[in-house]
Image (tube, rainbow, N blue to C red; front, side, top):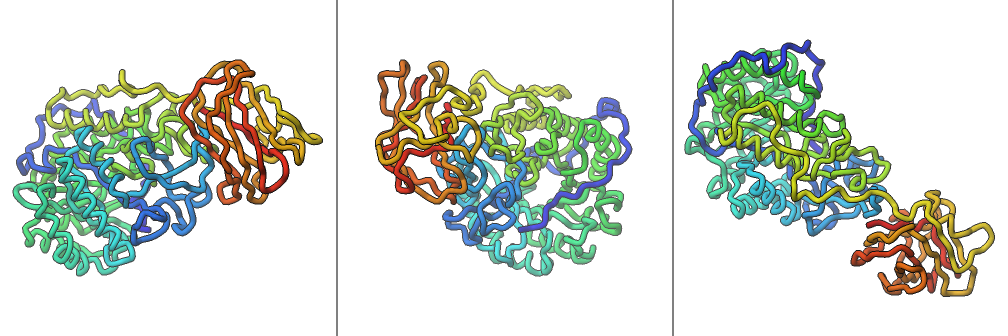
Length: 554
């Protein structure tokens, strides 16, 4: 796995808010409107893989620290959880079930349907261009990243989006020679696509990481300048993903790189991890970005500052206010384009892709924040919708405004789904029990207590009164996690009056396995019921009906 881009800096003293910036005419663009100038670009990682998806890299790439073990709270690289309602294929994990009882599953970027879905979102929400991240292709990631380029190209062509290659040089020891070889032998061929981004008539390529003051990018100014000039000689329009303090050569930037920075056609300074509040964004606009734009204008360089939604896991987002302030400050400054970090960066919590809305849609007890973490419900697509308005403001299609026009929900946004187990703590009965193993143990939230029916006397049932007629579409059943595997043949039925029952799930063998937490999830067409009954007719592990949990969800 590549080293993260995040480099946290000590907070500088905050200055006046953005509103105190002197009014100024928009900066003059060095270039006319193209596929990056006058447009919104998003960083697209496309770096998630899952076992069984066919990716050459294998395993849970970028989902797990140990990619050969399934992601779980103890083996993870992510801090946010995706909303998966638009995906047709997902992969079960070792996370606990979601708050509403559904199994915790994740997507694979390697599935073409995932890429198509992401680019459909880009089209729907007015995102112009995707910057496809490309780390060292000479390592074991190379074949997977090659394939991802082809998948992105196909999706961009179909949806009318643009894309370009964005090389990240982090940890790339032989970058100077291998980047040239990679561009010549592989990536340049994609510039023939109608979807490949062009600016000033030239194919766009970005190099991210030159001049950063850390061990992951130890290249000299001469090495970096050689690569920039070589790409320009190939006829490319070259963007530099550069340090925040590139112009001053301090903090995150090495000294002596200004000549390298000025060799780029466009500069896109990094901002992730630099601040987590509105005052910090305003301070950077006043004390860093304003002078950056002036320097670029004076040197005929296009300016594409990084804008970001904020780290959801750290509570930075303020239900959209952080993102909008980030955009407003840069549009007010006169930036020639915007680079959104990032589209699908669930590892650092700054993704704009559809994200879990409430605790019902994240793994229970995993400590992952949903979009409503500050008490305001936000639709899964909220940050995509903010991006729509950001693009309109950049292009002058709506007035410049510091007030966020995007609302957390829309008239067509479905209300938040009810969270929680409808059966928890409710009245429960059973056809029989042995010793102290009564039916109440199945609704007491204790994973080790359980109901056990009379032995050698099938069929046996357990029934919960939900207290009122409600809609149920999913039942989660468990036996104690320390038990060995067993298969129980179970029928699930529902009733509104407690006497006449309708079958929701006919008799079937359900396997409780320690590998899945001894948990079974049964789904069926949603039905209105008050009384929910589970009838056991066989059990391979013990001659009785046994359950430690009977949970019901809408």
